[in-house]
Length: 188
Image (cartoon, rainbow, N blue to C red; front, side):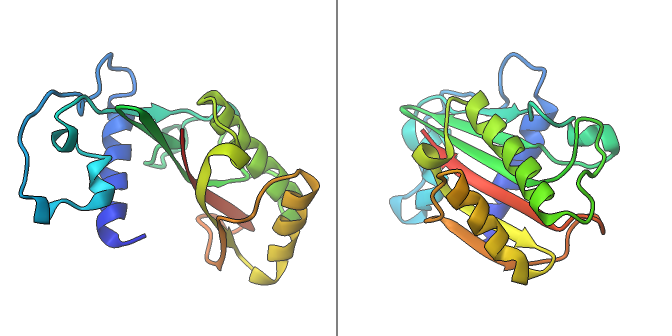
């Protein structure tokens, strides 16, 4: 994902988190401002009310199995749903093996961390009437040690989940004890 798209998602996530209790998203509008066609980024078309001259809604999506990240002084939304006419896009932030109290779980157990993290992702998808196989468009799996990536493949195969859109990456995690994290984009 390029820096421009990441910046848009971050801004949407922050604003959605700030307006999570509001009855109307700060992005809902009926704006009729249209930039020159040469300046329209295809990705931003789905994120810009001016591109359709219709309403766009941005909603913070809580995790049914985790507390809000703000509860443990981390500043991000678990997920954000962007609704445009005829389509909904769900952006699930980097999700790891963290419980409803904000504590890391399954320390030192890569299979346990994958199971819990995927339960969290599946619960968020279900809360938006989506499923992994029907709606997931892109996923990035982050591993502290990329050599354990086949464990995720095994999880997917044993649960009948497609791996077509998954990109595994070795990365440093936000907490020392975390071994696995995933981010996911879906649409319906």
